[in-house]
Length: 109
View 1: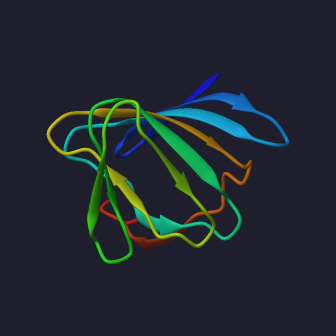
View 2: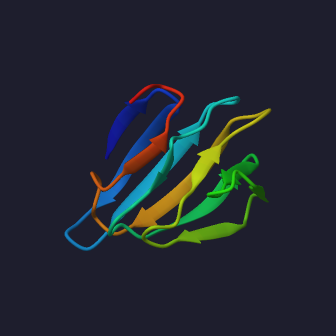
């Protein structure tokens, strides 16, 4: 396992194989990831704690509660965030860690 610090919180990579990656993402309250899509990467997230906010390509918000999941396919624009409380999600994806096309980012990456 390894912990990767991010400006919005951190992720713990708990599985890394040639076929898939398993992570736990901790998003701090009031933070969000970049508005992004992936060329190849496909991912499914499962909410463990908090309310996950997902902003789509039109910045419309979907809320996901603990026990709910979301599947993200290549080229699907998404942006995960936490509002009033921190969020923890489990993400399992294809192993394309560097496949991120950022459209907007609060941290100027």
